[in-house]
Image (cartoon, rainbow, N blue to C red; front, side, top):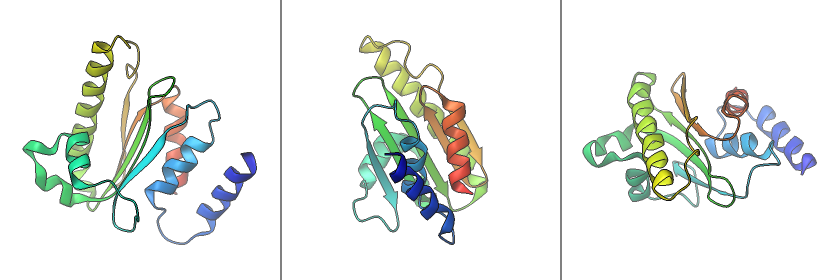
Length: 158
């Protein structure tokens, strides 16, 4: 596992241009062997198995602002419901001026997740959700150690 992670980091650091967010999320989550198994869903150009626009609309709550979908360049989501609830989502927008809207959608997503988990009797999860902007990228972390995960994401972004 460690060799796979090192190989992934070397690949990310040696490739020119911006890293695909799938690779960013994979490197940020693979570094923590304590995380439960989960899946990574992606949206944007360049993904063979991408989530569809309907999923993105539901996840971000875009019913009132569907045009926001056209502002998203790249999107990757790690989510796990096995064991502890964990979620890491990274969204790259075409323009940095749209990150405040992106942060608002992520804050709403965190609040909705918290409500759903509390209703299901899983209070305590998503309590420490963090939303951070970095240039034209918005990060939502609902993980056991948000600070460390966000640090890894920023490092992988370059």
